[in-house]
Image 1 (cartoon, one colour):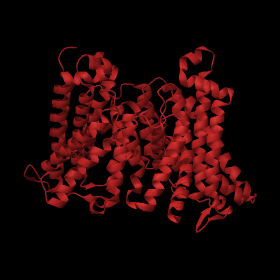
Image 2 (cartoon, each protein chain N blue to C red):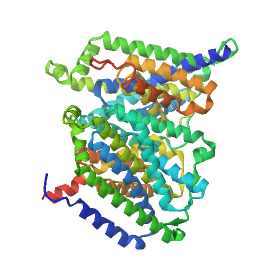
Image 3 (cartoon, rainbow over the protein chains, first blue to last red):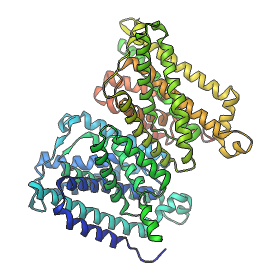
Image 4 (cartoon, rainbow over the protein chains, first blue to last red):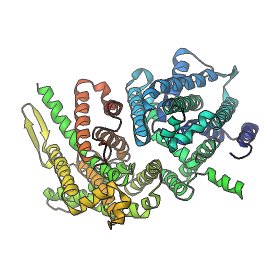
Length: 312
Length: 298
């Protein structure tokens, strides 16, 4: 393994820069960055799975679950505290993956992708059919405070952005430490050859189950954060196109660093906003084209651009 | 009793539709190991081209009975244009990459095609109900069914038999099986793997476009019609066992019957009954019903 890990330094620098400029950003940028960070959290979870060779096409399940867990608490049970909402989101994601993981952790390759897809589509169907939760329309979430401070007005939005930045920073640091620890080092080994991992005395099944719980907690956290930011949640969050977008972000950004998913999410949201602004009828084409370009010319994702510069 | 009959007939009709859609997906996966996310867009493309051509055909005063031929011709047109374009122009650069990367490539293609459709046809809906109404209705005791639905069942059976014959009864089919078993050895023995891929992909695209073309008369052709079709087709082929043609047939039948039972008896679970079956089947048989331990079949 090569020298010192500079990732914590890079992450902290990013956090400081973001928090410093946050109060001066126009409101559209505040919204865009906050939503990107929420999606980046989900993509960060996917990164962990992808290091182990697993691609979930159903992270939308945990994303929606996190949003609904936080949203229901806020809208029905009067929980007005933003921190409680995101915490509930993460807990719901982890809990669901803890149960579903008993089955899903046994699957690999395309079957893993398809089983996770099936579960997310079942959840989507359930949400659509549940009148009490607003059916296809979903419902609004209006948290009132964040760490005791009022969330009213534009300053509230900036506060949510700061929270998102802190959560992203903490999660990325945590995952970085996990990937460098014993349990994380097993990921590429599992991707390469499971049998050898078992011979070494590690349990592939339990490790994959743990990865699932961690990645789903991150997805639930992202979902809770999205509910807090957007103020509205609907079943679309569990639909397969949402899950597809998360995989998209992860591949787009590359899995080379824990900072990459956030970079990818911001890049995708920016690309989409600008494409939508300039050619509302062809923004999907622009996004699809960018994806193809990255896959064909940057097999390591956007992140590899930075890598190359470092090496030079 | 009448209820049960209705469930069965509805189920069989829906199964036929599913099989017509899923056949193209499973053949492409079986041979090329590409789970084609753009399948739904090709389906939509087939529907749009069919709607346009049949509309023009009828306005031109041509015999309406021949519009069925126009439907199939529309699918052929889509296949001949997009099949080689996509395979030669894009997919061949990605062979050898991860299966998941290939899924993402076709996902990007799906995004692009969705917008191409909107650019060409706009966002309003198209109707070509003539081929549907032309055949009239058929009565089963108290139940009435359009003959067109019966024709779909026949089309599904013909498709299944033709594909089976094509794979096991022709020289090309035998080359195909050789490529499925081992791409490299087949190539070393003189099989033109490139041509096999190109041809298979075009056939798969034709099947997808034809599914759209045959569906066009029964629905309004609107943007986004392919989005849901993708995951439903995934569910069918995964239940049956990816790449297996018999599996796709059985998967279609199971999903069709389950969905029509859900519609009749438990309407509240209709929306996700398909995925429930998919999760259950995968839980019991992790690789689908027709996944042989030996080399993959199609």
